[in-house]
Amino acid sequence: MVELQHREIPTPALTVFVALHPGIGVPDFDSLGFQPVKTAVKADLNQDQGGLCVYCESKLKSSKGQVEHIKPKAGPNAHPHLCFTYTNYAHSCINPKTCGQKKNNGLLPIEPGPGCNADWTLSTAGTIEPIVGLNRNRMHQVHQTRDMLGLNKDSNLVDERRRWLKSAVAVLAQAPNDLPSFLLNAPFRHILATSI
Image (cartoon, rainbow, N blue to C red):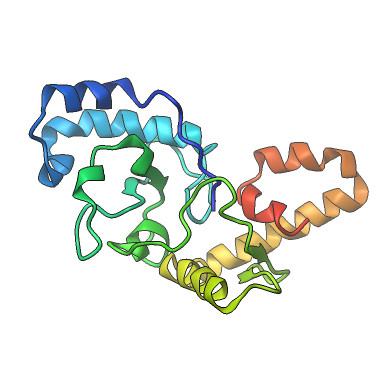
């Protein structure tokens, strides 16, 4: 998961839109008038996330994917007051098996942010697993977050992570000084860093 740190100044178009529409609500998020703002927000989030999907860490172009509400805007876990809050947004890929589409209106026990990868690691098989030694409650949170996002359910995603881990290990063995540069440009860089 991307250790997301939002920019200090939110997308200016979002700030302006919210100021001009004081009575906006959840339905306005999908309105035609908000679409240009959403496009600008998505581009900024993509930059904040280093061009990766916030959840699976696959490469993601700024023109693709969706603006994801970390805390859902609707459903049983709704936080409608955060619908137009930049720090509640993330850029997520669109895959019915994983990420924001799989999470739907669920509330994640572990959200993307600094330190979010502290309790899991990438196995040599490419699966995301809890680290050894977690207490029962934290182990449950790790499993629940991973499973809510479907991070081990898409075999293509698992295989791709396994290949990148194998490449990272090869770089580490052959040219250890090149590893930081390799990770800087690699997809899955946050989860890869937990294993190396």
